[in-house]
Image (cartoon, rainbow, N blue to C red; front, side, top):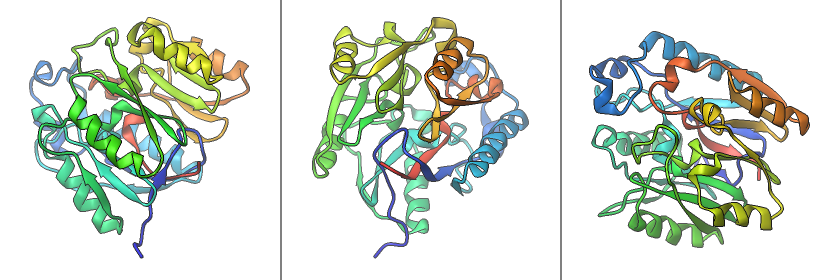
Length: 290
């Protein structure tokens, strides 16, 4: 029996345990933000403060927080731990990072997961590319996987083979891009589930067929405006059913969620946002109720 049996087959069930990484000295290795497709050069101390505020909120909501620990000196995007893998039915599936600046994050995740006492079910390899920021649970038996520069057909094929073992289907979603896209957009930046029957979507980035699929499943859609998509409004964290952590500065989305009875907690992440990511990418759920 393993010490940790991770599993997370929803985006909205009560969040029990997560893995995070506070940005450290590796963050200072970035000199030219353009080389990293960042929108500026964020201050490491400020990003660390924003990250600490998130961790404090998670703990206040009863979430157990594990840390990744020391990472490679140039792995400046290691704070986005969700991108590297995901938990399912007692184990971890590790992706394969496509951008050269992120290669090596996979090994550190494997090392830490094994230290925590959980098995590795699969590591995407060969010509496969798979970043788990492109994977969103629609329900406990269906995931949406965005296909873009950061996740290719071979990567999806390998992950599909693993998920089929647990009777989980994949819906592929070609991503047209965000409002600031270089083709590296993750699905989490344009689509997010906040309840079994409620989604946040930036509709310009996904095919009409995907919106039809959501409608056919009885899922109501909140359309995220362009400015709030840039502000990472779809990249939310549900700590329990009905309670959502939302980046500050998204009044349209906040109003829509509150009008549907959700408890909205806002967090400031202006410096983190410069790196291209959002709140959801900062946690890898290890244990979440279905």
